[in-house]
Structure formats: structure tokens, C-alpha cells
Image (cartoon, rainbow, N blue to C red):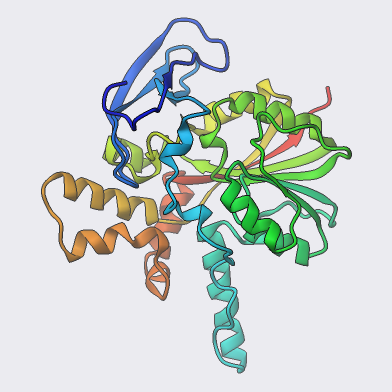
Length: 329
């Protein structure tokens, strides 16, 4: 495609569910996260409604759109809220618990979101530099990770973690089954999500669980902002799921969706507003403040938490966490 990064090859791919009837063009957008060149189209399958980026960079070429500044691949990190906070008084301990509850919910590191399982074997796909693996290992889990970025995987291994530099679609079968598989904002990056989910079905024991988060393309944010939606993140997000389409993919790969949790976060909404204002020629303190909201710390996230909770109750926030159980029938 004209205008993409030099040497990047593009490809078209049909709906992974094998639908007939063609696609409907939804929008054309660009790389807003890093400002890399190219125009990319999002289409909707007329059969099942699944949204996907098409054409897209090939598996071999897409690495060019993950520059060194790509956040999940930056340095050994720890979940927000890990550092001590609050005083030693009863109120201080209570404030610390509230703070961690909110931050883990926002940044998907709150381990209470994992089903109530005794420690066992856990796989995280797209594990980045291993922050979540370290947290679960500290809770007694035997952890393993898959991370396609060599740089991020090397950082995870430097912390003593068992992380393979492989993608979910092409990784070799493990020698022993897992009790739990997780992935945080990773499935939308896969070229073959159905193949990846089918691999997980084989790798997880009978009755095992799968928990993952993805952007929610059925949210108010996507309807309001279109190509300026922060979670669109073209071209690295190859699929754009709704609760209905992710349920179809899970069912087609042997999983039964049990629950969808709409995360109580507004970072996507704020950053989308920043993109929309920039499209209108505004570049000031307000737009920079909004653009930084997804990674904002301090007390700011707490102030919008009531609104975020209200929107989440109606399924209208831009991120969702999905629980599924392996089906053996």
C-alpha cells in the first residue's frame, strides 16, 4: 500500500470465521500512537459483524510498527500501585487498599479479576516484560510467558521468568497442560486470533480457564470518535472486537464465554478526545493533558471513577475483560 513504512508488505485476509458475503468499509485511519506513515482501512464482515484491519502488514513486516518507544516493551516494570502508599494508621491502610483496587482495575493488574483458582500452571500470551507473571509467581503460580518481541522477552527472562520469544499462533505445544491462560490487550494484535484461541484450547487442561482483555468496539467511544478512537491503534490492532464477535470466535475455537467485565476506565475516552481536538488544529496544554490520561497517575483517575463505573455498568467503556472456560463436549 502506498505510503506505508519502506519495506512493509501488505496483505488481505478473509474473515477468520469463513463467512461469505464480503465486507463493508467502516473507516480509514492512520497510526496515531507513533505517527508512522500509512493509511489503513477497517472493514466489517457482512456475515458475522467482526471488524478487522484489511489490508494489513504481514506478520513478517508488522514489527516496523512497534518502535522502541512502544509502551508495553519498555523496561522491566511493575504494576501501578505496587509502591507503599498511605500511612500506617487504619485509615492509611484503608486508603491504600482503595487505591490499589482502583489502579489494578484500571491497568488490568488486579489479580482478583482472575477466577478464584488455587495456584497451578499459568500461561500469559503477549506478556511484555513480565510484570503480571511476576505478580502471579509471587502468589504461588508456576508461570510461563509468550512474547513475540525479543527485546521485551529478554527483559522478562532477565528477571528469571520462563518466557519464550514466540507468538501465540505459531508457538510449539507445551509439554504439560496449563490450568489458566491469560492475555492483557494482546488478542487484537494477532494475525490469526482463531488459531491462537484454538492453540490455547489444546494447551489448557479440561475445564481450564481463559481470561483476557481487549478493546470494546461496541463502546460509546468508538461510535463517538471513529478513526480518532484511541483504542483503534492502527495498524497494530488487526481485529476490533465486540462482546458478540469475541463470543463467536471463542465458540468456534472450543471455548464457552462465561462473563464479560467492562473495565471502569476512561483513559481511552480522554485520549480519543485529544486526537479529535488535534484533528481540528488544537495543540495546547489541554490536548496534551488528555493525551496523557491513559497513563496518568496520582489522584486524577479516582476523580473520574464514578463516571467510569456508570458507563461500565452499561457496557460503554472502551475495554473489556472476558472469562471463558474450555468446552470438552
